[in-house]
Image (cartoon, rainbow over all chains, first blue to last red; front, side, top):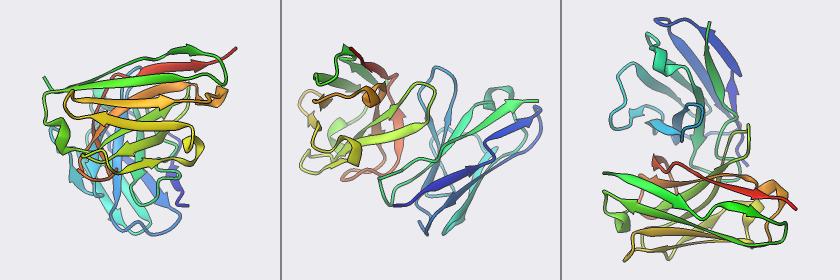
Length: 107
Length: 121
């Protein structure tokens, strides 16, 4: 089974700063990785798929990179609405599709 | 409006059954795979099951295999999840999620608001 490990668990930043979130796969998943944002009491929202493709309507400040086992979600110039939990998800093996999440909180 | 609307959640005893429904609107339902994803209280996301556009291909996570059945009615733009032999660990918010793909689970680009399922005696 493929396991996704996200780091850090929590990130404390101020609006306007850059956020860098990591997702590491236990084995290669080429570029078959997505990122989701979830705010309290809301459903998740797809941000990035295939490691670097922005989903429809997602602002350009969200970008994804990586391949193989190491992936990064970067949020440049954090807006107040970006403080949320972020999950990565792989589509290669469905035993554990999602990472455990990274919470981006306000400093 | 493009949306997914779940219904059918509630409180059920261990060993009981529940059937979730998800009504889709605003897109061509029969062109896309669909999924159920759950989230236990205070926990992360867990993919539960997926179904291809025609309904012929179904996929399940190991914890629910043999107990849950996913199905769809393309004439009614509705997705279902029949949950039998419920356990306490099935307690979660269940999200219906549209896939970017047509034939198998890949990525989820539209989500419903969620239906709470509580399994407790």
